[in-house]
Length: 417
Image 1 (spheres, helix red, strand yellow):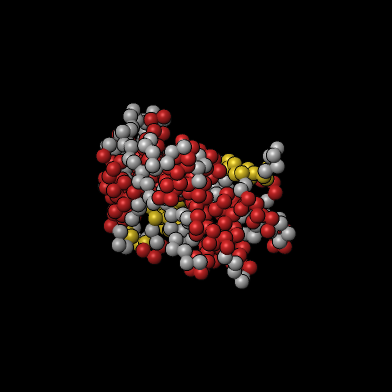
Image 2 (spheres, one colour; image 1 turned 45 degrees about the vertical axis):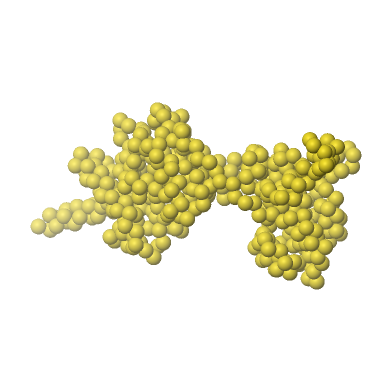
């Protein structure tokens, strides 16, 4: 009897070691699953987000989110079903293989991923793996958010987290745009980004021969042109002539004006030093810099107003100690002080560091500088980006351009054209 009892205790211990468990947990704001078997663990993201306070790990439920709860419980059911199948067929349980079959819905005879899996593969191969090489970390993070929201559309609109690539229809493009507007409060242009990313993902699937055609091939939504907010020439002059008592205010004002005359973004003006300057044959100076956002080249000839600001800080102790050409504070500090400057100067437009960049584009285009040249100054690959998001169309500019046209042609209002 004693021998039988020892064997029984040994079997019981082995069963405990080989016990399979699955548990949800939250890391940051992302919802993960942890699979445990035979003292081995495998954790992976479900692609969903959830506050840790709303997760009930025992019941696999999310308080106040029925759709996510259904998805999470379905994942648990699918994983447990595959584990049971492994045991019935006496196959060794491999956690990675288990994930492939239960979560990614892969089989031995099929390597075609689901739509959600295709989104993950495309994001990982074309963005995440190139972080710090072709893309900045913030850009990759933005793409990850796009993937998460598209997955949520698939879950809530199609009620199927395992939707096949071939089950998408042309109407899904517009449905996705409408879904983002309704559920996330996105504007039209930002909602369209999601549909465009989905379209790119499907092209990636075609390249991998997972599908034969792109159901969104003819989905070409138009972007809306928003009214560009920029300072007028009068407001720039008013700001330029205003002198403040505190040197911090004058620092911020001058940096802001320098960006108005060069189009530099905050990240680029904050790292500006002599290495980015080029002197032309005629003695004029020019800035050549790769944008901190995407390394697109910017070619910026300096106008007299910008040179005056640089000369003003040539011997400034703050600049010399930091080996920078201008005294640039943290972006949050800049925007806070700009808000106060706005009130003091009675400027209606809310001032931010990015407004200076838009003011630059509007200022130069209104004064006859070609759109292509302004796009090069700002580091835009497409002139459409400059025209849509950075150029303000003003009545004064139209009147000035027509007057210049009449002067070139020798026309006046008393004569017929």
